[in-house]
Length: 308
Image (tube, rainbow, N blue to C red; front, side, top):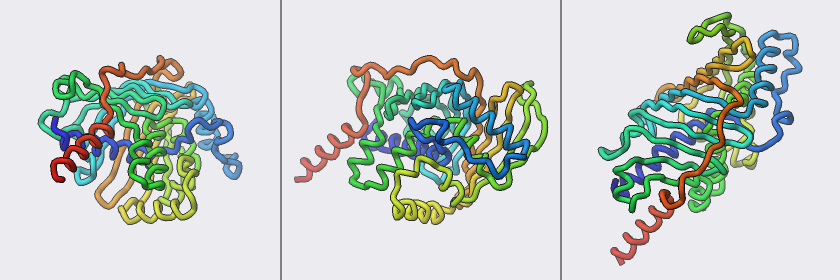
């Protein structure tokens, strides 16, 4: 792939990460108990009681296997559909998942699937054999989103992108915490999901409510938060809908998350299983890895030298 293609690939993948971050409300390595949802004023609600118990159980599990589908309007950066499957962990945040879908088709040489590994706040992506042939045999692209944001010199962007990366693994316990803040939380009824007996719950949040519950935004100043809220509203983001199906063991086995926008609906559906059984995530070998930011910086320096 050419440098411009890598630039487009990186931009598309960062866009996917940030969209996931907008949808999440993970709080990093904080004490989960300290961030438990505040539901005293609805303590009599059966739905609140069930989801509070599910929140605590899911937070304690720390990991799960997941199959996820994400659909974004084609007009958005990184738009299209993506499917992801693998394992994820929270507290600390880790991920080892394989992604497929039309959103990856940023160039004719783009791989049909990309394996993504995340740990220590860095994302690694296996870009395939064709990429390796043009990168001295290195097939893994490293994306340190925090470092990329810092290099931009935009402090607010740095904080927002870092929060997006922390949220990229979509910690299901924090999705439950957000749902518990919905003013219209309700129990839909009993349903079977892939043959499993579940109870179905749903709720929604306006943009302002969504940002108030997003703990990763706590690092922003009042002005930065206002600027972000203004930009979200200007982008046409209208609200956030969540549906969850909880099994008899008290775990969420499916979540359906929708974000309304001026360009269309962003939707993520995730199926979870095997809570608490994920294996340790390891970074790829250093000699098989190239740093996207370093590569783009070198390409930029070369272009400047050629034009001088």
